[in-house]
Length: 187
Image (cartoon, rainbow, N blue to C red; front, side, top):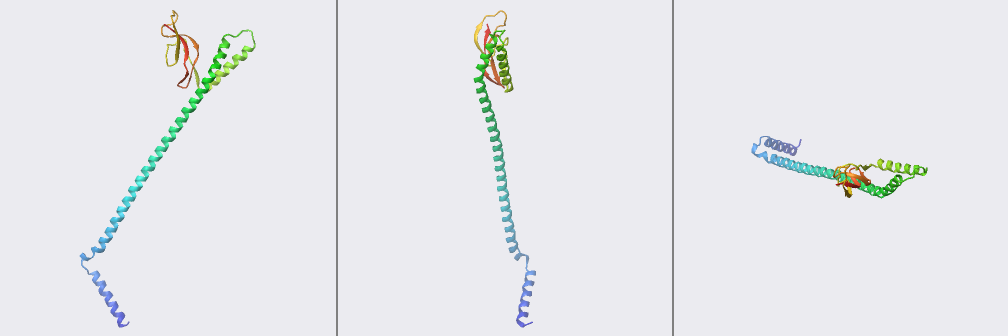
């Protein structure tokens, strides 16, 4: 080894001894820096976790709002379909009324009346298949939600406030009254 290399090695050994034997007060400077970096990283981690929790919460709220929107749209569409169906059926009911009146006044010995009777039954079957029900009114207590009174008449046979006769049948689609029954009511 050369003198110069020997001298450099001795300096390195001296520095290493100085670091190893250094008092504790001189070491914290490096430790303080590492501790500060650790604290900064913990704060960043905490901030990132808070942002993640906020994002997850926002996402969950968005999902819930979307599900509610979807249900509302489905419910609105169902109501719209029911209203459209009801509007179409209301337009058909006068034809059924005419056919029923024709059946009440039909000649007994004519064979074509059997065809009209068949048509009336088909109409009624189709309406029942669509959920349309006839409002049974004759003899029932008058209810303005289901009946429309066209007259009040004295009657010995029927109790006061009850329906004497049905002039025109009323119909319901589910819980909705498509057309109230036109009735005569006992006084």
